[in-house]
Length: 201
Image 1 (cartoon, rainbow, N blue to C red):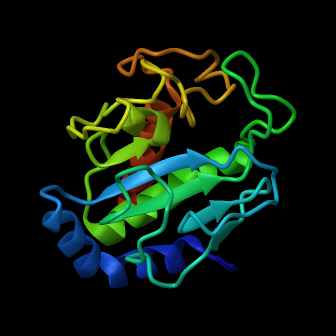
Image 2: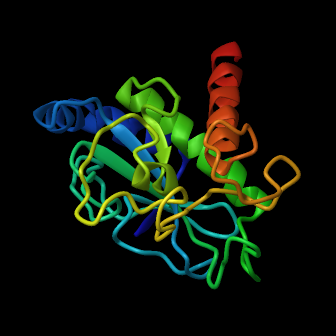
């Protein structure tokens, strides 16, 4: 693992763009960015994700090639990039526990999402930027026939990463993906704000 800046992350995504697009097209779709939490501790990083963001908001990559296929999202790893917050050990749908996402992590994942989306030439919307919880329910419109069926908040709730953030904008758990207070909607909104802000500079 090595720490990178937002600009370095954008450059890594740019370098991997062609390979990621080729891999995604081989599966009949466009590239995806999957947003996770690790369900671990603030400074516990995992090689399953291309990007790990620690409790202080620092960004680490587990590989210098974002086109590497890592095991971050069930049935969705090819042609995608996994970004994870290091947090939420012991979290439940009613209480994110002693290590919820920090303000620094929330801003960093939004900036990291913007950087990767810029490098891959992706629109920041639910079709392209998806939480693991949303992906588990195929909320992005991708029709994946999971063995055992969908496994997100609207089904078995096996994966519900970032369904809420325990912030003023995203206070409570909900299974309505169109609710603006879901973690996914808040994070995409923030990433788009950073994209607009960067373009204004």
